[in-house]
Length: 215
Length: 303
Image 1 (cartoon, rainbow over the protein chains, first blue to last red):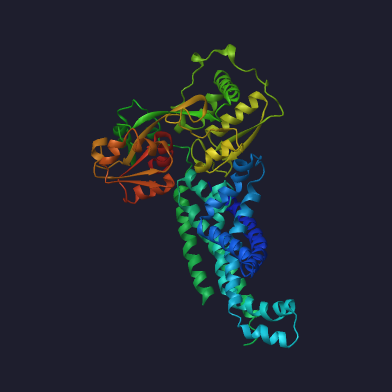
Image 2 (cartoon, one colour):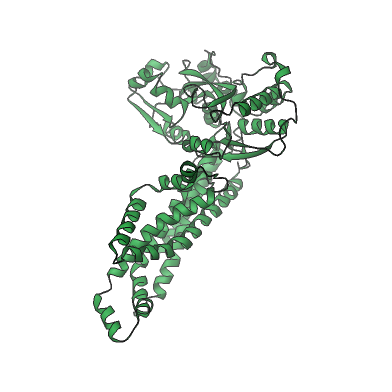
């Protein structure tokens, strides 16, 4: 196998990894926000259930969760899972990452002192206005470094999709390494992940700088 | 600063990857004859291999023989019978040997011959339901049975034979590469109709409805040619590598458990690629592997 064949095969795998990455970000970040609100709910039942959800998502391996999301419908309900492979991967990743994002958001929310809510109330801000105009901008700034961490982890975690035999980049690297008895595909995979994560870190740094309007 | 460091790292990685590539660029199909002609009964392998300058050889003694067959869901007798019949028909019309010729590491282990087949009971060519798509479940990490070929396409002996079966019967063919650890879930959930990927029958007789045994294989011990390990007894106190969930591993845990107990350590790897690199680097003393996959593994270094 020539280097260019290897690169083009793995480049194709990289596109599949990117598909997992972007779709997971797209679904998990807003979902994390919802979970955060449920977790902070004053109703004990709601916050209790959310706590259990977060505990399960963070406490079990993502690989196992992916298997459950894909094979669950068949084993629990006898449903046909034809064509369900990719959706199962996206659901699995999104549900898992949403739990982590929810906790990051919550950490950001906790940094806002109670006095700010009181001050906003005195100034006549409604609850929605208070959240979107005063709280959220500060929260975003506070959580950006943690979110960057999580996103970088996600880039590397996309390789877990091999569990469901989705041919993303690392699966391809393993297959090519097996057939060519060579380490080269792993080195290429390393370079690809590094470039992807460098791009992520670069973009996040830009965003951080753009939000640094008080300095 | 960050950019500079990134640039330096990238520059270090590029020559490293190019170097790795040069080593692996040799065509893998051009296997060392001495290594591929290794058969279960061949006692003179080590000498011939050593004469031709081979770097890695199999021990004369083997761990045991196994048969590769097609696994179907329990109860799928009719499908198993049709596919097995079609395989036999392909033996009679020469396709089976033709595909075998392309895979020198497998050729000598193919066990079906035209003499043993009763042609009257086989399905007719084109007799299958044209609307049926046969979903072939296999592992893409298992050369030379099913793997990514030099042009990065999916191939291997099992893939080609299964395609030929579908062509013969007039079925559609759908490849379903899966993760080997999840093979039973995939089969039971119906994502594939069979497991056909160098799949060992021994020890799993009751777990599947079995189709025809189309290949034999021998589990052996791979060592460096200059190693002082010459017999299975010499493995005592040595570190032996094996890939997880393979029949070599099962054998060492079961029928060859006594032998495995004499090892200093049985090191279990996720893939043979990593185990082989450890053997090259001298981190382990031997690898337990089947002869076909092993011949494939050492082909480049012995060439």
